[in-house]
Image (cartoon, rainbow, N blue to C red):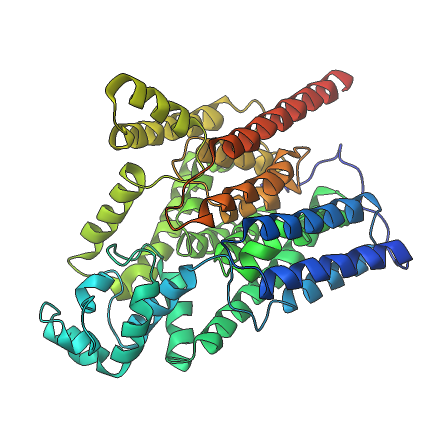
Length: 473
């Protein structure tokens, strides 16, 4: 197998032991102040304050990268800025309530994919699970010790009428955290955050290792590790893309070293955290060959099957299918192509056509994946990060939902490429938080137009730069 190298890339810099300048130290202090404000003094509904602090954080980030912050200082800053969030509860996301809910079920020995929250806790019940006559008796008995905590959590859930969509690796972390701290919210959050911090530490090491293998400057790792979106959404808001990024990079690193079977296991763990990394498999066809890719895919799926094994039930496939159907046919947020098509649907029919447009765009994503898989001119291991970046970008441009933390894998992959649009997008997508100013979650079309208009400009600029590089070569 060819190694993951790029002989035309610039060589990494020698060991960078330069001291930081006074202005760099000041910029890091300003960043710390902005993150402290975001962590401890910024409710999600306060969009003006949120946008101002993020603007400060992104401005300091851009300047620090431009000033060539020494690698050692950047790595230390990345660690300290993450530790700053350690005792905080997520201020910009309420998903962690569902993490605790699922974790309490797992800790009690119940299958989180088998019951909706509204099936276990009645809205008008003061006694919790015991008072719900529709709850199956075994579930009622098992959940008795956690009934009071579940009743407290239930009003905070953002999707009490839907089955859990979090894969088994997430459920394992939820279960351990909620089992150790069943009635202590901050303790459970702290334990989950420590898991994500370990994942981000692994990401830092893998970024440095892959950059060294590609012959790229190691300072590029700071593009990801100091990015404000990564800091806020993964460490701050407790999103498990931190595990996905670490496991995806581990799979790529193992592939680079020729350990494709172990790499398949790592990818299986990534898929067991979020399903998205499955999209890597088609890009291996022309790199590993058909038979080895088939074996790689089989090992990946076997790993996923083993992870799901403890949760297997008659309802598992049906309930997950219902959740995926709802995702493609009902949910929408911060979309691009979909919103344009939706506007056309309203104009032609007078109502929202998401039930048709969502599946159609999913088919469009399949077509995009096939185009990249078989249309790539010279598929090598060195070009894999860039091709995967383009694949995921197309997937999200055709998606009906694009939350800010979805971009973090794109940012990690961009470190190994000449593309810069994902970093521009990371600064723009925070505009989507404007929707949370009211409980109606109304999106601002002008902010959407700004986000995707500037993103389109950045992508065109990147494309032209790539053409100039090819012409010069």
